[in-house]
Length: 293
Image 1 (cartoon, rainbow, N blue to C red):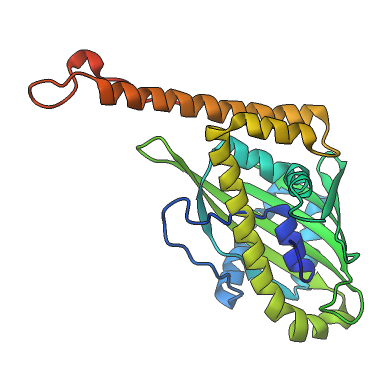
Image 2 (image 1 turned 90 degrees about the vertical axis):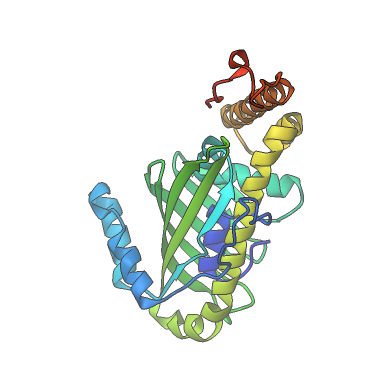
């Protein structure tokens, strides 16, 4: 599933998301941008003051030797916020699902509390770590080597990805999540020409597509948790290399979504079956408070 140079591979691995990209029922731009003005805005928005000295140094090194910048398509999906955050912070669970469902041959393993290692079928390897995590901001730093067909020799590079997230609960009780991912890539000096002439034109489109498809997958999981939670529990039990406590956290997210959906359905049914007053509305005894999750 994940192809292309280091930028697209890293982005697709960390936060790949939905083929049902119109789940939110909104028209959205499917193309990212690498414009100078957006790049300057993205750099200014990085919360460097929130990082420790070591993490600041890593980010500043990439920015000082920046080869490629890309803001991926800004997406809005219908999704439970807790499930979304869980998957952002546990990319190994996402990739294990793809592996179990035979959607990808990508291998991603946790190497420490906030660190992971990725190995692609073509030999590309990436080590990445979360430098900063809040409910609306995640910063990832990665080091990797691309050995795929788009380059005639291995390409080494480092990358910083900044994911900004917004959450909205509409009046109908449905949650919508907005994702904006900015990626900053620095490659070794000898590989800059390869990136500029070969990888950047193709890799940007691949990264855009990977990001959109991954978010769609996330939206699909949230929808499935409402309609078929037992199916997701069965899938959870089949995931390779995922510790039991992480499976339990995923199952708890699924159960919460399923319970909320069932409660919401019960409210809808009660309202639809309520006796009508002469004015056409429900009788006073039948007014129901909105369900809160």
